Length: 124
Image (spheres, rainbow, N blue to C red):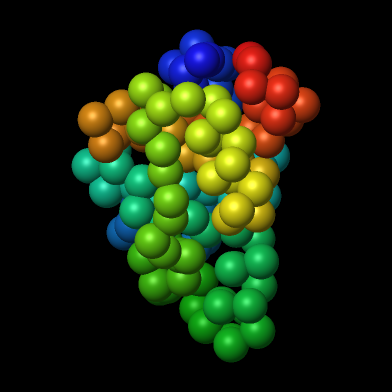
């Protein structure tokens, strides 16, 4: 059985809980991503997406210079340990209806596993 650790992971774009949404949005633009992983001590604690910024900040007329990632992040987020099988990861991603899964080593974020044909086939 193929383990997640054998797969090529995507380097996640990370922000801290204390980062303002201005900082978060600037990082998203610079990195050309639609979401960032919120970490605390290198452990994934949430995710902020463009949708979160629109619905939880802009639509509610909040100040992006004051509101932090912790204030609007979706949490908790699921993650899987890199020692798990790719088959388990696939089933978990299908069940949760997600296209990227944070992967950890001893609780610390090491990358994102993308939902792909290789993951679906159980190979990397």
